[in-house]
Length: 333
Ligand SMILES: NC(=O)c1ccc[n+]([C@@H]2O[C@H](COP(=O)([O-])OP(=O)(O)OC[C@H]3O[C@@H](n4cnc5c(N)ncnc54)[C@H](OP(=O)(O)O)[C@@H]3O)[C@@H](O)[C@H]2O)c1
Image 1 (tube, rainbow, N blue to C red):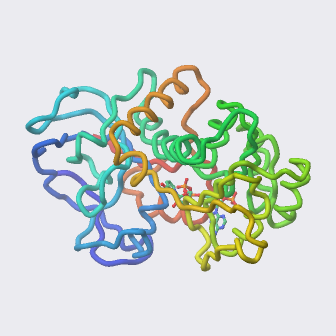
Image 2 (image 1 turned 30 degrees about the horizontal axis):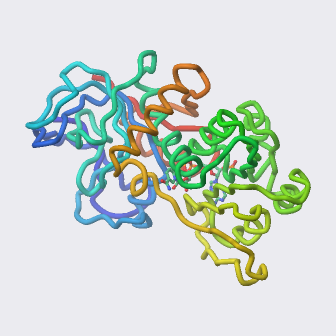
């Protein structure tokens, strides 16, 4: 039996229960992982509350797509992994099918990566969702190049901090936004060239001022909602406004007409649909990220670590919005 987080109804953090569940055996194409650490992501809070892009299909439901641990067993047809191998699980499956908030998880081998040397379980559970999302969105989809400027909203999130590092790594200039002054220094320390405090400053004025009126080649937005109108004003000609999250729960307009029909390229991006679902794209992204981890250009940024039994507190902490970087659950065996 494996201690496993499940929920029997939709709701806030309090619906989460730690229960003993049979982990099962790996089927064809699957791997059984002894989970040592789990990456906590906004997607889980949205799934738990019924607001995710995919609804819960049946109760009790499981949670989690990002973890690190060790291979315990492999199913028929799986190659490249052997028991004892340190690995990470990356978001590449539906939480209706598998969940990694548990001591032992069966997951598709296509969502398992060898853990680079020197990356411990906590780092291995904190690094992939942020960097895969930043790489897939900024490099693969938006084509971020040296010399470009990129605006990163809600930049203190796990993805935002990875995007700051990645932008610097490719020779682009990252401009970060945050709501209050509290996280400004942390963002500058991570490598943001400029930080805009949105409760006090006008994003459009600041970005246009910093770019001599040109705007940013890429705007990578985790907030959406009415703020996209101001963000659209700062997209440079031929640039992209890429929406990858909806932290605002207000409707999101398409601002192209109000702005006089500029050549506004505005689209959504999800790492699961556009990066991890495609083996060749996942491999390319993983190679890029592993190389950055080896050189020290990239590193996991962990805000706080909770025990699996403290999952309710971990979700409350995520929803407080006070974090800088990733929240991780650890599993004692
Ligand atoms: N598309 C994808 O494939 C993909 C992958 C991963 C994550 N995501 C999305 O990316 C976003 C960030 O996820 P995450 O897990 O890295 O971090 P997170 O924990 O959801 O992000 C936290 C940060 O967002 C800011 N924030 C929170 N609520 C906000 C609000 N209502 N309006 C504006 N800012 C708000 C806060 O920063 P400040 O206090 O500094 O403002 C907070 O530190 C989420 O929306 C998530 O769903 C998408």
